[in-house]
Length: 162
Image 1: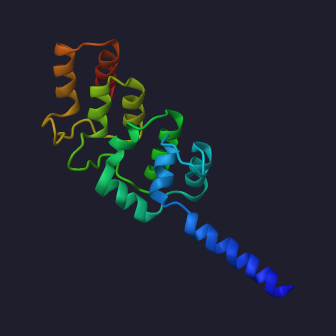
Image 2: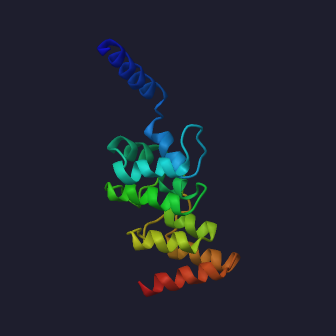
């Protein structure tokens, strides 16, 4: 009986380790990318309870940046996931070599909700974006001249109030 019980637990642990997805895949699942084994809520629960590992925050900083996560599908889920990264001391102003600053991405996408959320969590609008070589205020003026929208006007008002 003990041998069967041991064998059972050994098989369960081995199978779990073999099919267990990487934390990086769980991150993408939590932000909306489909995964066969788990759904978005299950993946998000991992980060709500466990938080991201130091290794994952390094991977995000090196390979993706917050901009990629912010551009992922879904709304609520990606903000919860990104907040868990920020709670693990991830710098909201880090940008990878091929992406815009998160605030700049919000301006380009005309996403006031994202813009407001980033500012409320410490995103620095005075930083110069490596892709556009402009800070957020300068970029907003360019977009307000070329593609004015109500959201971009609200972004500028929010910047002027802070």
